[in-house]
Picture 1 (tube, one colour):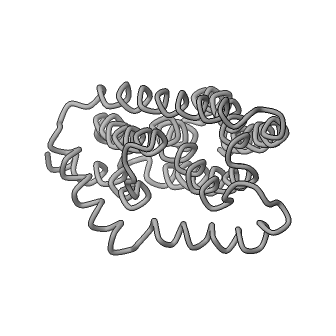
Picture 2 (cartoon, helix red, strand yellow):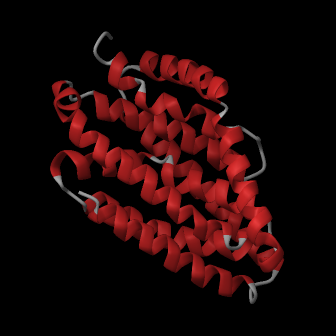
Length: 229
């Protein structure tokens, strides 16, 4: 069940190590340009994934209710607090870019996307690892780019990949009867995840400062909403 997740975790670590080495070689201007290009690609991935849904109302309700849940739980605050704890422990040794920024940004890029949700669901429901293997290749390249600018925090996001993707895969195996009853559930979950990816792309470009983590519960609300809408 976790083969795809383990491979993905390994590629994030490998890509981050290479990126950290490149960060000492590439000039700041070049790294900034590459980061903005990655932000544009993140936008493209988000917009492409938004086109697969059939009921916009499910997306709207999921985002609204998910935002309320996320704000009440303060998911973004907890994630940042955890990242800052890591930063206090490791930053003095590593120096350089903010560990917290690298960890949070990379965790969201690697874990919130449509490929994460759908790939992990395929892992749990059918044992098909193909989508996560494809995602692993993309994350390898992304990790190199992010780590070259943001440092070791990106590599630590590999832990988030393992926990979140592995958790979704394990949960899917238990929820398989519920998810397979309605074929529209996974496409609608993909749409919501893609909306969050688009928001993340805007953050990377510096256009917005959305607390994307607080919207994360929205991804799972279509499981309930598709039963009634």
